[in-house]
Image (cartoon, rainbow, N blue to C red; front, side):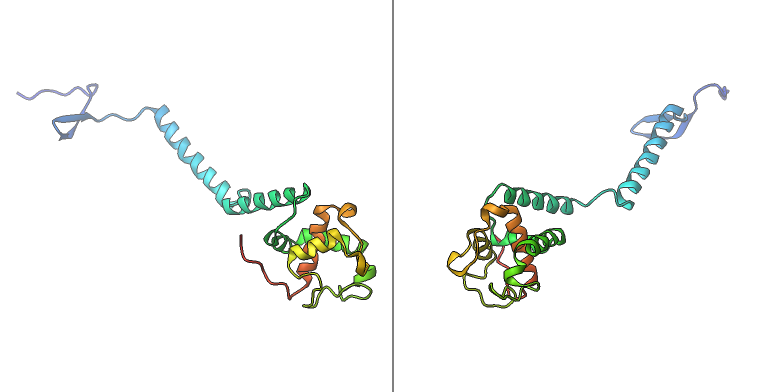
Amino acid sequence: MKQQTNPEDDALRHHTYDGIQEYDKRLPNWWLFTLYGAIAFSAAYWAYYHWSAHMVPGYVRVERQIEEIQKAALATGAAPTDVQLWRLSGDPAVVAAGQKIYTANCVACHGENLEGGIGQNLVDGQWIHGGKPTDIYNTVTKGVLEKGMPVWGPVLGAARIADVTAFIISKNPTIQKPPEE
């Protein structure tokens, strides 16, 4: 005799795995809303952080933090390295600040275009006191009183001298990039 099925009874699926049969029931609405909400949130999150300019890539954030650390180190008075000064010469904001300082303090002796005059020519390949970035930095800081170059270290401070040095490096094509540390 055939058993009659009541529509209110739970229906079983026709397949069996490892002797286990499943009920053919619909998932609860709260569970479905949670699933669809998570899918919508992940799509919106992905679009916001990957299509908008809001999120900066990790390597850019690290480079910015390194630059900030180097600028902070220069502001404390620590002597910069050749590589640090070379990197600063590639930063347009630092070069612009260095140009302002140069215009206010150095133009009278070294000329508007760094071509020299009373002071040394800063755009040719001949350097009396060394042409490495740290040599230029030290010359500006300590001065050369025998040649008429004043001591700028106490007047400008380490950060401003680094800016001026970066400006000079950016304008002189003969200064070679130093090897990485």
